[in-house]
Length: 444
Image (cartoon, rainbow, N blue to C red; front, side):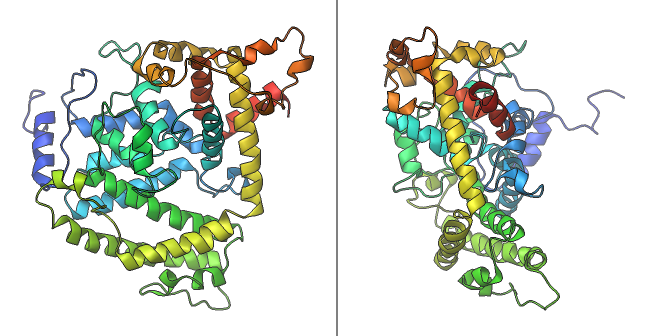
């Protein structure tokens, strides 16, 4: 009996079995950014998935807002639960086309790893400040997600086998993170706009994502559509009339006819499987038509459209739900508006305050971040601005004029590194940690 017994599958055998079970559409792992010795029991995308699961930033998703403030109800979704749902849905889509399961799992789990505390509210606040300070592209969680896995996560800074910043993931996983945007072109955070200003063109390639990345993107849209509505029903924001006012909920096999003894939340949970069945059957059927028009997996990068996507009619139905329920009802819920207002205030104030007073940033974070000061990461920002100035209108919340010894010259010619350090620290905080830190430092 030896460790080389036939009962054991080595990494080579695992790869052979994985390749055999995959179709010609499945992506292949390319060379990592930094030299990395493989182990004897996992293949490349498995290693990526595992590195994500064991990362600090992934764990923090358990306390980052999805839509509703978590304290409203213990059953409200946060980013971690959403990421797991995306993984399940994307894996189902991928299985229908023989795509690489490990790549899908890694990409789905990491797709929101760049989200700030309080989700889109925190993201929007940082973006507005960066635009105000003159940074092209502002800030978005797609770009920052790749920043996290390429530069900010410090797991391998002092490793005995590897020495570099970031998780050293394959470009295929990073592609899933950067390109899970709602749309490919147009205003807002479209893939085209994100790509125009990204610092990651040296590692990723232009065009649509590979099919695994497109499966993650499609699953993301399905997940937040369903979870937002479910959470909205639970909190009483969404009524049965809202659902019946949308075409999708009249399609078979969905049935929202209710008995007098039933409540809407229970009915939605009962019918959730039917909604998922309808959406998944549609996307798999329609995607099969599009993919079959390609000759190889390389064709999808320049196809001119998403190969994995819903039919035109179901896409219109989902857009109707977005307009009538998510935008018109959920985003205007007083609890959401109040939470967003508070989040914007706390995130923006903490970002600006820590830019002026970086000594208040966690010491361990500062020590790990300092290694990036001379890296390509900071060179990207220094090419835009070596120094920045913060106008007084942005600093009204700070009593600078009454602070002993404060010189207003400190608000001018600030090393841009201080701003990026503060941005990366604030974006890394959980909802609870940001609230606590804001209270400690600003007392509000």
